[in-house]
Length: 331
Image (cartoon, rainbow, N blue to C red):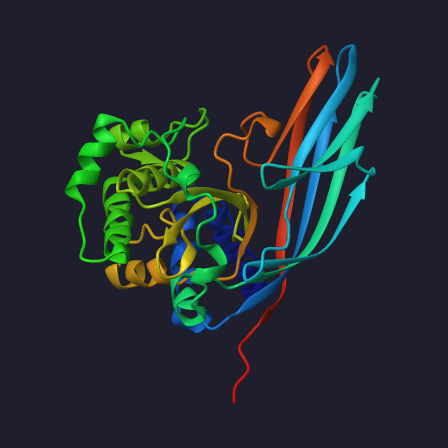
């Protein structure tokens, strides 16, 4: 009996200790777990994503328009197997390469809720698989000028960005991209913040940020080197209490087309694991959006809403889980 009581006390102490882990330490544990060799053979993951949006309407609000970005099937990246809604969307529409669902509430109740359930298969795609599949023809000459431009948050023409870009070189295009990847990691410290997005210049100046700042700086430096790159937003399967919302990047490589990289998850002290993270990404990414400044969702990366009348508030809840992994077949 005494032993049992002692065990319960120890379990309680361990639970309290685990709850006190910071987001930073949890993220680093996940990064190291992500890049363990035994997991690199997973080729796809079947996943469930449950999104819930709870609206609070304390005053006289006459209308709410809520728009959420939906994932789509992307060959070689993800297969969307089904989406269920409650309530039914007012409309589903496409714009600028994205798909959106809009929910309109006329004279909303004090509490309104939108629930979306998504089932999908996430496929492994990274530099190694791009080399194996040699998919250059699929992506060649598809409006690359849009991914070389200076824009809000990706200030590739700024003097400080240009100065850093001039200091980065390489024998091949992949060498340059890898050196940019290492520069971002070496000069950034991962930290969470509650402010608005900072953009590439402020990230460079402050030398810190979250996945958004890592991605903005990476994309800006690629574009400054005349390498097409774009911001990617979506969800990723994580451990602990860290939000599944995530940002990473894609770079257009002359020999392989668009290839994803994740600089914030590559921020690992162990150089062997960092090198591995550059070319290998697990199939845990659900792509939503490649538009850095998306006016449809009020420049958000995931969803946005407008209201007429007194202010309405929304709180989101996200549950993203792997149902089953798929390993390559052995011969």
